[in-house]
Image (cartoon, rainbow, N blue to C red; front, side):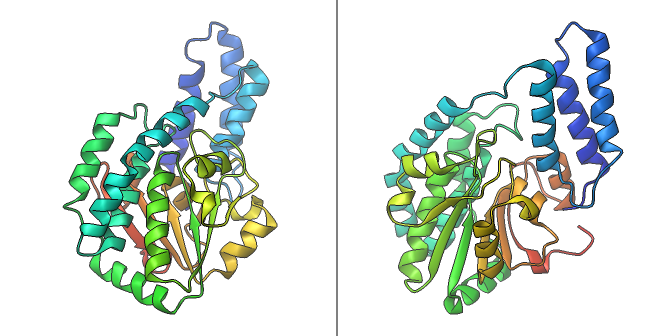
Length: 294
């Protein structure tokens, strides 16, 4: 996705807020000048997730403060979703279209995003899940999706957040049942990136017990093709169909012209404007059918 002024302002505001309480104004000014200098020298493949990771590393170097450790929060939200797993799978199986219901629940799980949201509330998450029982996917896009899967040989599933990965697991179970000949490969973040799912989360929720899962070799909160592992890149480029979860994956992948179905909630002002959507409205869109001006 092309960078825009809104994203640049967001990057600046995030960095400014991180140092706001620090007393050394001279050092703070120098730090922000470095941030602004980087933003005035953008490269063609720069994107918001990669810039955020770059700034986080610079922050640690200058201030000697390590990024927030999300380990315990990730376990907490993984367990929350695992506790609901049986109930949600029952709801999926009792629905008119189990695959559609599973995708909707998985999309709602994209709410669990501590990088995009200042507050992630369990009550709001549970409310969104309940409302999801009345939601549907874009009918035309879902028709394309099912038709393509019926003739596809391979699918790559790009996960996003902790907790959410438990709901991704339910989608994959239904996909395996409905398309038993489909080869499915899951790709998670290669290293910690905020509360994004890694191999440890995939193991905790039991996903690795029945499906191949690999890390992408990168610590960016997205799937930045020029900088992921060769194995991940090969799987993605050769997949017949790709499911991509979350805004970060959209920001790093949109424009690549691969057959990607993006599944996410609109959580920031720019995504809401871009898709003319309300906050937390779900999207299910294909890379090849997104208007070229987005």
